[in-house]
Image (tube, rainbow, N blue to C red; front, side, top):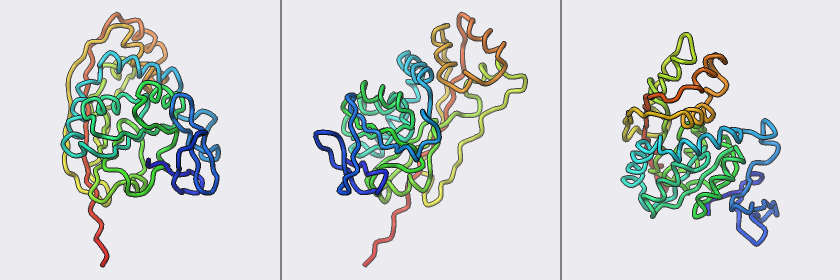
Amino acid sequence: MVWICPICELGLDRNTQGWSCVNQHSFDEAKEGYVNLLPAHQKRSKNPGDNLKMVQGRRTIHDSQLYQPLAEVLSSIVKQYADSSALLDIGCGEGYYGGFIARTVPTVTLYGIDIAKSAVKLAAKTYCDQHFAVAGARRLPVATSTIDLAMCIFSPSTDSEVARVLRSGGHYLEVGPAPSHLWELKTALYDQPHEHKALRRAVSGSTLTQEGEVNYEKQLNNAQLRALIDATPFAFRGHREKRAQLREQASVTLTMSFSWRLFTQMKQPTTV
């Protein structure tokens, strides 16, 4: 296992009660199988991260396979670069992408972290053969140089922490919205909509190995549209009246557009 103590940063061992380090810092394992490695002093609010309604909305749209074409591309990248490796999903949410990858590339060992307890709880309950922890991206409770591929899908990450947990020559997969993603929702909610900013093409200490986009259109029924709004910042952004009108539409066709970048961490020189 790769988990480390978030207090003293020593390795954690599993026991009958949960997890503990040699300094006797202990962390209970929930009945769903995840461990909470987010100490109170590292929280910025009582319940950080996405709320339960956002998590449930995301599960609904993932169950409808709205994002499956993206998941298929990410799975093919993992199969090419890390087919029998330790993967870390930073900001895993309710576990959809990691779950898809684990099904299609069963040789990987997948670890997921998210700051939202409700998301991790649902992920662990659904994907019981994977490893999950409540934790933030600023201080990953993951041992140094233990991860072959780290991925961050629509979530913030901390470059120094990603570099620390990656093995020499490991990969970092960063995924975000392409400029025109969900453009129809933006035009419906904003007077002056703006395109998403392009993903960066450079990460310090790494080289850009591959990049690409995934583009397609998808028609959503009203239930799927409502779930998508609930799962995204559109739930509380834009004009309230326009959002109410949008939620009443029987169906809508949306532009789904994503960018991804695969970076390879430069190998550290060996010492003699």
